Image 1 (cartoon, rainbow, N blue to C red):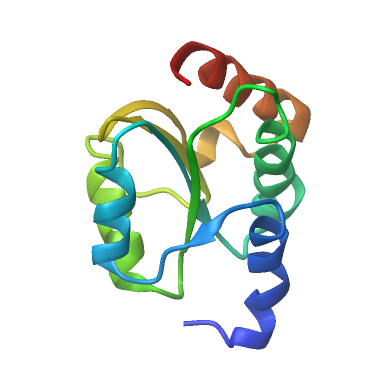
Image 2: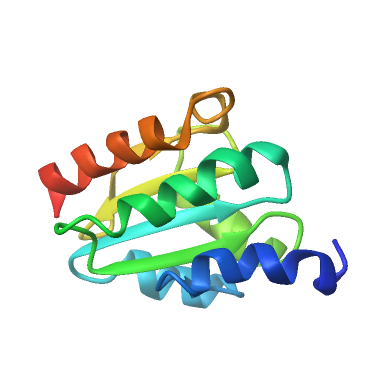
Length: 136
């Protein structure tokens, strides 16, 4: 677990853009299994989260067509919530950062860490926007 003062600004990057933080497994289940579309961002302290993933997520949700719910869990902090979110992302291996789009409780799109590292935020945002246009 990281000190809260360290992750607070990283959390705020998403919550100020409309993401709701999920801090336990029950909240994750309620969000993902709800009707409609849910975008889940597995946040992280790593450099690719700061340079690529969080900026891409913020850009993508500004698009005219976006998911009904925006939620986030933080790897290395709320273990129960992160583990539950990752369980919904199977068969994909655990990844942080990661971004997943669910529709009516089913995983329809995922971006794993290896698809985030070394890619510009705009390219990742464009990928998300394409998924939003298709599923939302």
